[in-house]
Image 1 (cartoon, rainbow, N blue to C red):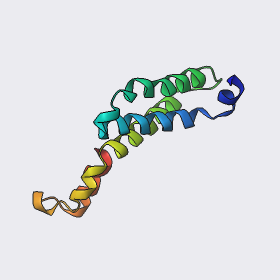
Image 2 (image 1 turned 180 degrees about the vertical axis):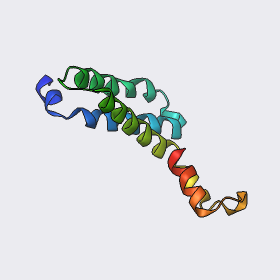
Image 3 (image 1 turned 30 degrees about the horizontal axis):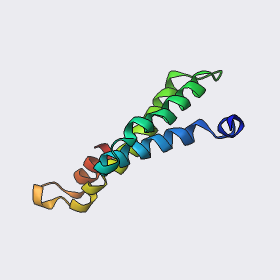
Image 4 (image 1 turned 120 degrees about the vertical axis):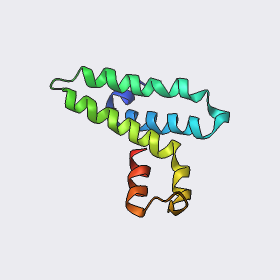
Length: 101
């Protein structure tokens, strides 16, 4: 089992964790999964920190990937409001709101 975990790239665990946390926000019935969903992220960070040459820039990128996946999954419902003409927001502003959360 340990050999299988070692072969998978740490970014997979970051992606998995971001999606699971987002799903736990969207579906309240599986909200308890949010506690378990942090385990792959912690494992990925542990694995990445042991790599030689792991810098603050790479750590920022890993966190950005996690947050963007969480944000896209958790706030997918915002796209149903597009375009946001009813709020007086144009298309360009609406795209920034959706992407930047």
